Length: 330
Image (cartoon, rainbow, N blue to C red; front, top):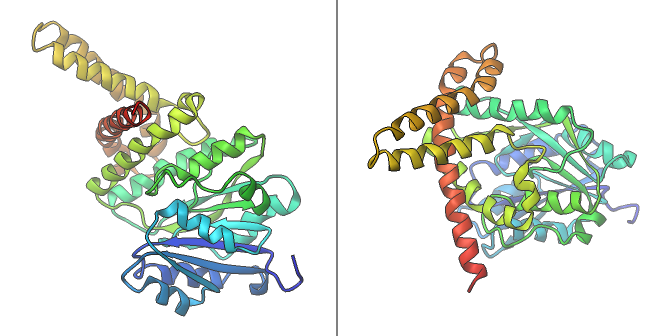
């Protein structure tokens, strides 16, 4: 790397993000790190709302415009032109905190890790958005106990560039934001690379604020997790990010739905259905107890929202598995 080249590159994929990209880029131009040490690369993935012009006006150093190809391909395009030895990723709907770059690159510069994951924060006050934030925060607490992780979300991610290139970047078989970042994390962890969690490296984010948007997001994740788990079957047993209780909840949901079907023909099976519901509610109590002193309304809403989430996400996962198996057998 020449003396004039930046040490770090920040890549932001963007599709129809004219309303939000300005705040993201502006936040990146105001980092505590010397501005000459990093470049801001925005990859406009075929937007028609003027995203590229807004990004350029906000201070992006490089704006790539390309046909719509999906978020994984957009990130790879940014990686291809990145000059920094460390490449960071965030999303257009995020606003990195002033210390974000400094905190993210520190473990990599020290040689302690090749990949780093940061955190979300939100200013939102609506119930579902607050619930989403607490859902993340309990995961963050678990991650803080781990010496290393196997799961990096690209809303706040940093990697050593050479390692990322050697791994092949992001897999374009994931056409929508879903599990492409997790796939990369699993690949890197499988190769023995150390990934770490830095909770102090945070970005502001706008979470889904309605139940419908929240469930649609969970459905998308569930569908594409099918491809992920077929590739990495051992990870179906758990990872650094996913709630360990989720597997139990999926099992209870299957038991409940099966009992409801059989109860149409044999009434005593209603007892099994009732037992499944009670057991499911019990699985939500650890989060309820944890959330109660933080946000009582979220704690009260959690069991019902979780039931719907597991139903939707589990159904999407089952559909995704069926689709992937059919594709493989063609």
